[in-house]
Structures are given as C-alpha cells and as structure tokens.
Amino acid sequence: MTKKNTAKPQQVDGVLIIGGGYAGLHAAAAVQHAGIPVTVVDRTGRHDYVTRLAAVAGGTGTLDDASSPVRSFVDRVIEGTVAKVQDGSATLEDGRILQAEAVIVTAGSSSSRPPIEGIGNAHALRSAEDAIKLRSLIAGANSLVIIGGGATGVQLAGAVAIAHPSICVHLIEGSARLLGAMPPELGAGAQRILTGRNVNVYLGSNVDEITESGAVRKGGLLEGIVVWAGGSEALGQQFGLPAAENGRILLDPTLRVEGYKRTFAAGDTALHRRIDGEPLPMSAQIAVRAGAAAGQNAVRLLKGEEPESVDLRQLGWVLDLGGRRGLAQVGSLNLSQGGVDLIPPLLHEVIDLMGLIETGGFTALRFASSSAKSLIPFRLPEWPFGQTATRCS
Image: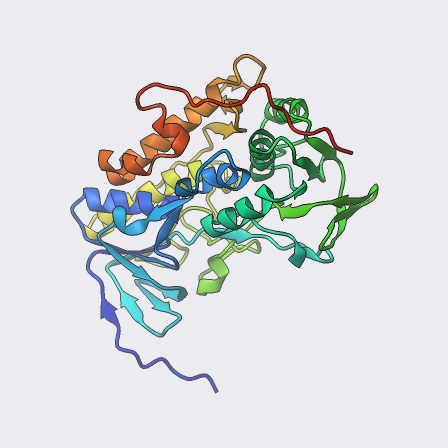
C-alpha cells in the first residue's frame, strides 16, 4: 500500500522554476525583470554550461568553464530533486510540497542509453560533473572512442585533437554524414576540420558492443576510453505530466502543459513545435528562447492577463571545434568553409556573453568562459597551430 504524503504544502511567492539550466535561468530572468519573486529548485544548485562541456572535457576549456552557482543569478534556490508536478505545485523526493502562483518545468534532458551490449562501460557527457570526470580520464589516455557524430561528439573530437595531439581519436557515426540534424554543409565542414586534425571518422558504422577496452564494430575493436554522445532523453515523464513517447512534455501554444492552467514547460524537457507543427530539436538556442517566453507568460498569468502564443524556430547553428575553428549556419549565411571557419568560434563566444548578460547582468560576465574573457579586451587566445593529432590506425 502506498503511503500518503501528509506533508503540509509550503507556499512559495511568485513563480517556482524546476531546473537551473539555460531554459530555467532565462525564465527566471524574465520573471525577475517584471519584479516578481522567483524560486529555482535544482538538484545540484549549479548551472551547467552545456555548450562548453565538450571543451572542458576535451581540454581546450578550463574547469571553471563548466558551471556556476544558480544562486548567482537567482536569489532563492532550493537544492533538491522534484518527483512529481501538479498544477501549481511540485513534490520533492524528500516529501516537501512547494506551491506557487505558477510553475515552470525546465528540467532538461539526460544521456540516452540505447540497447547496446555493455553500454554501461561508456561515459556520458551531459553535465559539468561528466565533463570534469572525462577531462581527467582523457588527459591520461592514449586513445578515445566517441560514439555519435552530432554536436557533442564532433566538438569533443575537435577539442581533444587540439588539446591532446598525442591521443588517437576515433569518431563513430551510424548515418552517412556528421551533424545529421544540421545542414549538410556543416557536416562536410566538420569532417574536413576533424580529418585535418587526424581524427579517424567512421560513417555508416554501428557499434555492436562496448567493453572495458573499447568499442566493437564490424571492423573489429577500437581500443580506448568510450564516450557515448549518441543522443538525449527528455525527463518529462518522471513528473507525471502528459508527455510524448520520447518523454518530452506536451504543451499548448502558450507553453502551458496540456490540460494545466498554472504550469508551463520549456527547454529539452518540453516538446516544442514550429508553427507548422513539426517538432523542434533539443538545443540551447531553443531552450533560451522558450525559457524566456515561458517566464513572460507566467508573468502575464500572475497579472491576470492571458498568456500569449509563442512562435519558436531554430534560427541557425553555431559550433566551436576548438583551435579557433568552427562551423555556423545563420539563416542563409553559411560559415563552414576554410578561411571563414575562424568566425564561428567568435560568434559562439559572443552568444555566450550575451546569455550571461541577459540572465545576470554585466556582473555575470565573471562567469564567461576562459576563451570568451579574451574577447573582452579584444585579444584572441593563443593555440598551437603547428600541432596536429597523432595519426593512428
């Protein structure tokens, strides 16, 4: 028989936000800008800079780049894990019940775990904790096997090849090209940069088994530390909210959870759609814009106004592959060819700086990445262009 929770609900002023990621901090900024109190519940109490994690793990970033305290952006933070969400309230694993005038769920996503034999032997790269652990392992390794040629896998391969040129890097992708969710030109540009750094890229290749020694594919065993970068899973279903089969929370056009009046959701945990109904990808860009929109609609709700429909769209892609090289597609502008691939890393850092200012004001620039800080006095970081990764078999 299930024990009934008899804990007395604790009233939280203003808006309660579940998760201190990109969507959560931008939602909080929108609410605080309106002068309304906000409380963030987060498992670790730290904001992970997901777009920097590959650089941190790979060695081109620093440990300080991985995360910063949520409390630096929001006055009231509760460290805890939410087990259930009801309309206008959240129940924590320790039994506490928090009630608020509005709730915004921005719990993010976790690394997917496909049915590959030995998947437990692979390391994930989804959190600052993951990145810091991998950074140490990679620094002492002879070879690295990355499974998944999406943004995380490509950026990690690029960073390791720059920071640790003696390490043999293998990148395995099951489809016919890298960066399959992005325009083909970006995939081709990524392959050009990575192969130029002696990264071994295997396209149309699947992994049959992961052992303590490496990854087994049709061509045999690739030895090395294995990192699974093959996808993410939303965390919406764990809260008891209506969700699609992939775990992403179902929303109405105002970003309210379907069937709920005072509960919104945004970011990776939510199923965001374009105007034509097509699902939008999980990305930091969508999380930022959706989080801000959810926060603005929560403010409208508290003021007695009707929340507005939200028009979300992926405006482009910007990737930093380390060593002052990267890829970008912004509208019709493509920056993936040799010569112009110097621009995307700068664009990546400018976006990072803008995000910090939007969520924490200019004082938040103290949390800028190590490479972004070099832009403030308009100096570029020095990288050993003469070094390339070891050619390995």
